[in-house]
Amino acid sequence: GHRLSFTGIVLTGGASRRMGRDKAFLPVDGRPLAISVAEALQEAGAADVFAVGGDAGRLAALGLDVVPDHYPGEGPLGALVTALRAARHDIVVVLACDLPAASSSAVHAVVRALEQAPTAAWAAPDAGGRRQWLHAAYRRATLPHWEAAFARGERSVHRPAGTLTGVTVSGVDPRSLVDVDAPEDLPGG
Image (cartoon, rainbow, N blue to C red):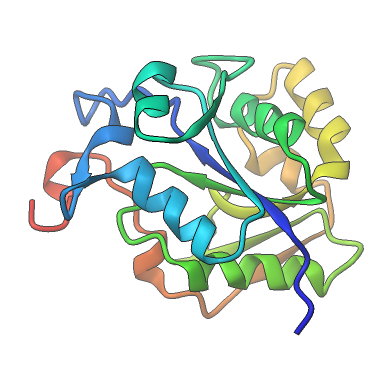
């Protein structure tokens, strides 16, 4: 089946107060979280994968292509704007770096949902009744909408997303959507 190419983005800029250290480098099965998330994007067929934000030197040493966050410390909306600016493809999948069970099938699900809804701006999985904006596919063409929201002082993704047509994706394995906020959340932790 024909598959559109897409850009994969790992958000690696969030300094975690609760975790106490940079989540991007936390080991899961002996590999840094950012790498396992990037690999899930690659396995799903991403044409290119970037890391946005964080410790550029350490991330590059892991072999990741790093794009500096244009709005460091300004939260997920600034990182999303940076990601869409950096993307080379119409569909951009944005994943938080703290998804220890990120999977190519979950990435596929949001890409497919957006492909099949040409007028949709985003496709985000549902977990426990909440859309997962940091495990979602976005259309690069919607960048001006997010930039305008950011310029108005908005820092969340969910409020500006609510004024665009999107697709809520059900049936994604909930384990793929679980993030880690504290060391005890890590597998085997």
